[in-house]
Image 1 (cartoon, rainbow, N blue to C red):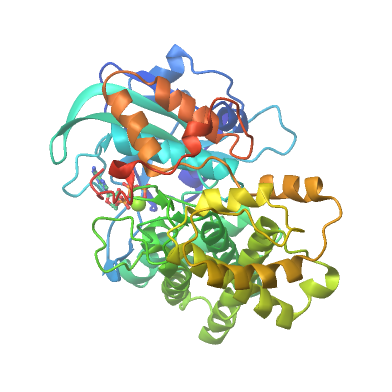
Image 2: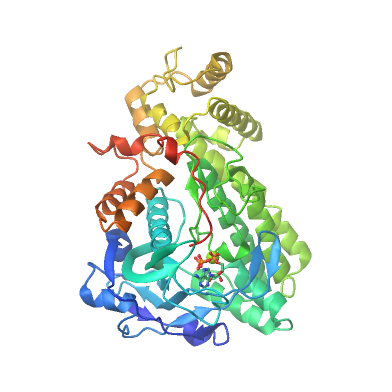
Length: 490
Ligand SMILES: Nc1ncnc2c1ncn2[C@@H]1O[C@H](COP(=O)(O)OP(=O)(O)OP(=O)(O)O)[C@@H](O)[C@H]1O
Ligand SMILES: [Mg+2]
């Protein structure tokens, strides 16, 4: 692993230098080999543990917290910033010819100038949830930040009751959020130069094919619109609810970012709310596409000193089509709706397929079916047969049967049924990070046994594989774990 310091060296005034406060009795709770490989690390050594828990200094690290603001639940917070996350620099695998650099951030490393009333810490349950969500989404090919490890400690922290602190070691291609641009537009008014400096840096680092001029800025914003649409298309298809889609939790790269009260759907419910602090459902599952656009509008507003309104609006107008395109691509694969060139270019076919998908979602909702398991059942479906075995639990049979007839007609006669089923199993996961599974792993870890956590992480790195003796992890939640709503306190 090697470290560079582009953000730190080139963007003075965009962060505060601050050192982690050491934690006592640090220990590795869980580690991701896959994430480690991204930056050329192989194993969790004792020295890395001391460095990433803030007990030893890491050679070449800079230690800083970035400043940003953001719209939270619709209202503008003029100054947020990393209140509990300290970035060490940009790490890369020195062996690669063209390495991707990843910021290393210690989330929960202690107070910073942006901590306001917070303690700068993260509790173990939230550090574990961030780790599992990052690595599970990555294994599902959903754009996301990554997590290298969780470091446990015996440091007490207070939330509703006493808990212990932990640190998630986060890897992100960038930590630049919509909120960074909002800060330099609204909170540091008159700092158009800084806005442009940040834009140029972002483009140079992450979009080197774009020019650092008006033409490039426009193209860049159009790309952010697209990447955000693609991200949300992924979430809607995989059944992921983020829970806190404030603009300070939106990465400009379109990666899933900041995992708090998120949930993967168990029972399909369009208006499912996973965040205890969101009784009105601003961030309910089905609201995410609209919220993605609302957040992009806030980013657009912050860019008005640099980009003409007409150009911003033109870019925003591409959002819906991009999202639908991505969603259709993924849903057609999940359901085995073939895509020929003719289909790919037919707006009428898009409409018909969206209707077919929507009717199926209606069936799932009405019959309270499990989202993941219902799609996984397409891998056993004899689609040539007039009788479907997708789900036994369907109560409203006539609606389903009518749907199934139309579905069969769209799919047509399948000649190689095994190949067709195999293709479904390669895109419909058997294992997802169900909230109750995370909860069971956390409770065991709080009792000093991280075995379940390690096993769950390993399982989720191969979500499409059958994995012998693991089928119990694919079960719907027991009663206590149904519709778990997480609190924001973390
Ligand atoms: N325990 C804490 N101490 C200090 N600041 C905190 C604490 N918890 C949250 N914050 C700050 O409150 C704001 C909103 O928190 P939010 O939960 O969105 O982010 P986060 O989970 O802390 O971090 P990130 O967005 O980097 O993943 C951020 O500025 C965050 O740094
Ligand atoms: Mg956040």
